[in-house]
Length: 475
Image (cartoon, rainbow, N blue to C red; front, top):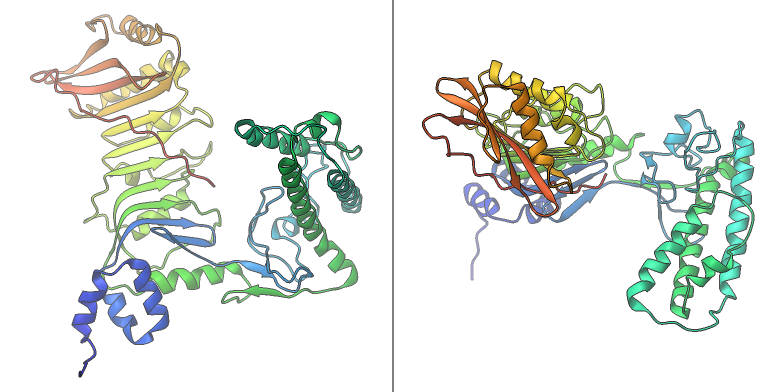
């Protein structure tokens, strides 16, 4: 049977309905379809931008630095989140020293009088001013960990106790007690060993300690390399002297030179690296946005690639910025619904700049709702004549049943002419509208205090909003 290759237009049609990851794979393997693939509309359900990683739906694309000439014959990842002390590494020098150390002038973390974890992830409060002194302390710690490992090799529980429900908790307690020890002397005591109630748990502890010792040895190796002038071999993808260049290549391959905006339902920005950027010619039709720790850099990144004129811009989820960080509230205000989480520290000044019609806040806002700052927010709404349908909801945890009534009474005392019912207060804004402040029962044990601009003609026509939980996003 004779077969003919697809025409350019036919190829575009077929590619348009393919899974985006299959398209990326085919484009990487078949150069002849790349022009058609770039011309066909691309639709992605969830696009996630991280440091060194792009996630398209459920598929991850990344670039890393690996040490490849190791005695264990298994490539060892160097870049990314360091397993022992959770510090971030983008690259290493010729000896393998992590960049967060070289940027600090080569000085090892920890042992500086501050509550900073050392290279091995232990909190050691001894102040050691010299790098050599800190290195010797780490070597002593490694020796101790080896002794503890040998201790586990010969340990046998006196009585086998099988308790599947509590084994995971007890083993977690064992690891926590191990990591929290700041001294550099002493083997495991009876209390720590008593948490290992059977042979399976002992084996698990042995594997855990063995892996940590290997990681510690790898962390010390660059300093031995420098001392002996040894330059190990590293493997990098499209490496040109900076891992961020490899990221640029990866992003360009997936997104650059597309002839139509990429349709994305949910875009999540989590990148740490300040050089992270998308291709200049990329445009996205965006529905939902998630910003982990909003910064001006991240907002500018999204704004530059968003096709604002044709994007639905339904919802933005924000973990607010650090104190003093200025961001573009006008762009965030284009989204119909803004959800934000202040679980890591309540900063009321953030909410005064929000321009969204619908806002849901998950926060410890009890003090704010009984303060002058809340009254300032109310006055701001009145003076700026917020339109009917504007709504702000504080979803808070408070076990005190009288708290909502206290909030309403507080507002009532400041606005003498504001008529109050059992569960709401009305404040006249203008002839056609008033501001209603009320409370509602949320899922136990949460309650919500909400502000709504309501029409005088339709006083009971409040916006029906589902209190959505803030997604937990890992750094």
